Image 1 (cartoon, rainbow, N blue to C red):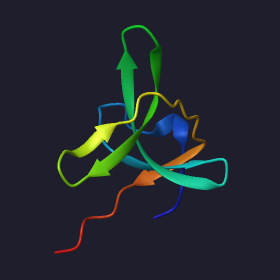
Image 2: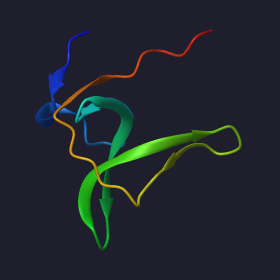
Image 3: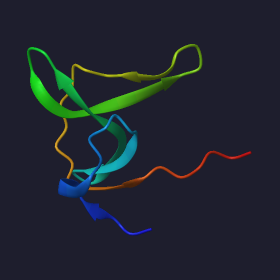
Amino acid sequence: MNWLPIECAPKDGEDILCYVDDYLIVCRWNEFEDDGTSWCPQVWTQQKGWNDYQNELHYPTHWMPLPKPPK
């Protein structure tokens, strides 16, 4: 799969792989009551699964769907 422009990324809460300033992060679009809207990085922990890491805002330029996990 090729990288796609961030303007066409899903904004439905789906986790996606994002390209930001020469690095990759997993993000999802979030709407915050007091901060507006932004791409929010997701952090994986074994106890909680994916969780928002809301104290950092990121501005990706490109995205692609996450690959399927291994079986």
